[in-house]
Image (cartoon, rainbow, N blue to C red):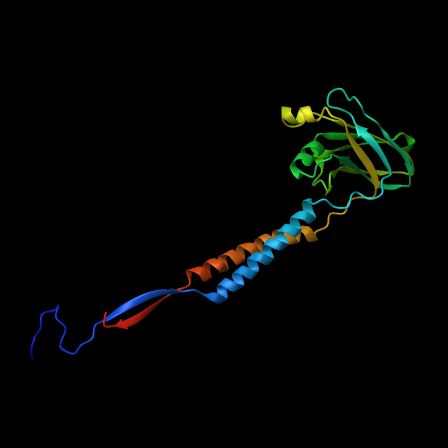
Length: 220
């Protein structure tokens, strides 16, 4: 038996050098791209459904003007005679920016005089959620017996000084019959789309990472 130095290969032997490469997982990439695109589309459609322009508030029973902050200047009462039922008061703001509209709704209070001397009061900040339709949003709703109804609204102190300045400008409100319906489909599309987008992004990452393959290459 003969011995050779460790650095010397026996005559006729072939040294094999490993070659490492990364293989993309195309199935994951395709599935991830499809999911991510579908999720984004659903989320965008859901966003427009929840906060979008809408088609307005529908039939209007009466309209009025919200009194300015502090002074109440420019207030105009909405007066109508209606059937017994529920009525909704909407703020017409002129903006479709949800945050701005919510702030002004929260600063609005309305006093309602009903047939027979009964009264009611609604406060925009006490709603569980304000339903938005384009540039209008609900201040609240009330039940009224058959007969004459008088609705007076005014702005109250709420939020920052900048908002207070904006509340010294008159804005219109309308009263519509019935209670607004809060559709659940846009919310499902919004949050479902976000979830699908996250899953799609994860799948894309898996596909891009791929897997490590080690090949033996002769005669390195």
